[in-house]
Image (cartoon, rainbow, N blue to C red; front, side, top):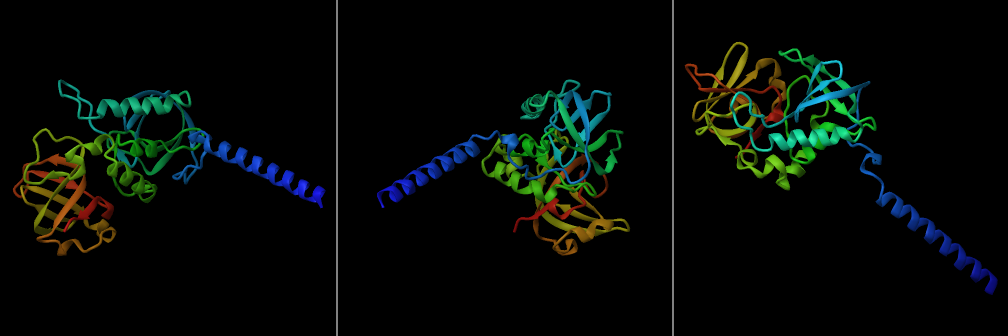
Length: 272
C-alpha cells in the first residue's frame, strides 16, 4: 500500500512538473509564434522592402511602390508642409516591424491591384504570416479605411482598431480622431483620410450617386452601385448626425466645399 501511494505521489509530481514546463513555454513564446488572427486569405509572393516611404507605403527592391490596403497613415510634410501628428512615428514603427525579418515580406495583392498613381495595392505579411497592417493598427499608427472591393480584412481588423481607440494609442489620443472633425469647422489644412461628423441637412439623389449634405458644406458621396452595402437606408438620414471616414477633398462647388466618397457601410456611423 505504501509503495502504491509513493508511486501515485511521484506520478502526480511528474505530471505537475510537465504542466509547469508547458505553461511557461507558452507564456514566453515569441509573439510571432502565436497564431495570426488575420492571416493571408489568398496566395502570397516573397519580396524585400528597399525603403519605407511612410506608414502606409513602401518601395520594393525592384523599385515598385506598394500602397498598404485597408489603412491610412497621417501625412508626412513635403514641400514646406509640416508633418501631421504621429506621421514620423508611424514610419519609424513600420521600419522597426520590417527589421524583424530583414525587410523580407509576403505580399497579397488586393482584388483591385492598382491605384490611380500606378502603385500596387496589397496586404503585407512578415514571413511567419504576421499581418503588418494589424500591427500598425493595434499600436495606433494608422486608421482603418474601407474601400471596395478591397475589403478582405475589414471585419477582422475592426476589433483591433476598437482596442487601440479605447486605449487612446497613437492617433487615437487626438480629438480629431476620437470624435472626428466637425463638418462646420473643417480646417483648410486638412489632408488625406480623416473622420468627419455632422448633421445631414439634405439627401441629394443623382443618377450615379446619392449625396449626404452635412452642415457646413461637407458632402458625402455614395455611388449608387454600392448602396446595398449600407444600412440603414441613406435616403432616410435627413436630420440625423453621422460620422464618416475617408478622403476629404477640397471641392468648392455649388452645393459643397468639401467632398468625401465612401462606398462601404463600415465607413459611416449613425451617432444619434
